Length: 105
Image (cartoon, rainbow, N blue to C red; front, side, top):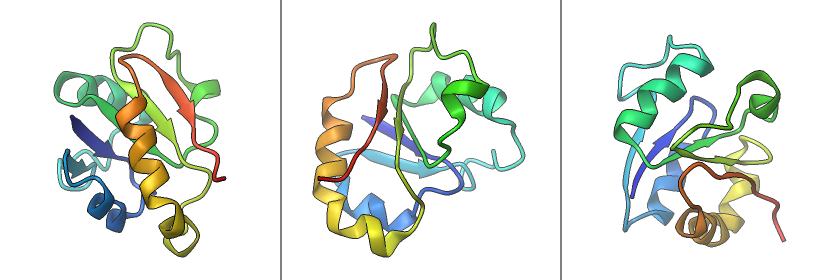
């Protein structure tokens, strides 16, 4: 799967997604795009969009999206690192167009 990290997504998370092709919004030169434009661009090249933007579902119409959206509860890598394997399983389990809020166990 091709995975895009939003601005706040900790880059070290990519180490847990070794079976996937991972890029960041910064690497794609999409840092200046608004969420709506970012999702449109991402949908053309990626399968999964990982963000820490808790308000995304209220700000964007996600009903007809082809890209899966995985929302992390926070951007702090020290807090997320212990859940890296669970996040990787969540990425593996998403389906096109799904919206998932990851909740640490």
